[in-house]
Image 1 (cartoon, each protein chain N blue to C red):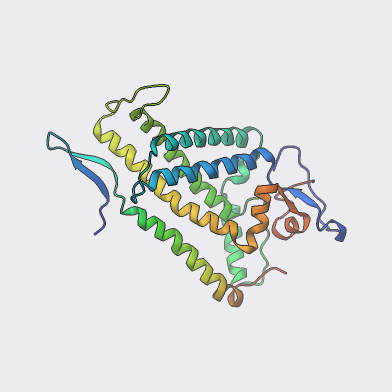
Image 2: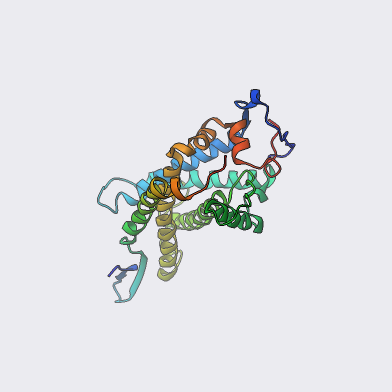
Length: 55
Length: 225
């Protein structure tokens, strides 16, 4: 389960919000790379057969 | 469209195919590359320590942030007073054009769609995403500078309450993470073979008359060069 936030407990036992969890880093990195891979596949396999081009 | 530009001729003479049309003036190219370098420095100095590459990152990070802030302010002033601000705003005609283009490309309709102006819908959507994330990351980044020592002031971590600092950090982190995906996609399109003419335009400033006629509607992007 991916953590959403970075949280720590201060000297008085209170929970403090520090920021977004760094687990998200891999999600956003993966999303960018997935887009690139999917677009390459689209341009390689689908675009030449199914997409009409301007003359 | 830059102010003062007029409509081009609609018929393309063969001897004008290689004629150069200015797409990005020098100040806009300088802005783009300053923004690109500063964002790359910000991403590397911001995220490398998180993945275990430890170095003194705070000073280059905030200095690159200041450079990015100044570049964005320059761009906003230039876009509002010297350029056609509304040419980058998404309108109903963009959505209608995208719908018609998709239907035509998928052979659903035979009615050929019109060409876009200087900035097609996908350009505008990307610009809207980058603009939104830039505003968030710069505004929160400037507030975060209160917590570090700079030549102009000493750090004050008690300027906001803990909860407020937390929200500022969450927003800064979220916008920074979006930049990772957006930069990957931007560089990918910049190096795709069929998009290299646009990358050349961002380096040298010009596109050929043929590229202009092939990709743009000269009634929507008027250019007399």
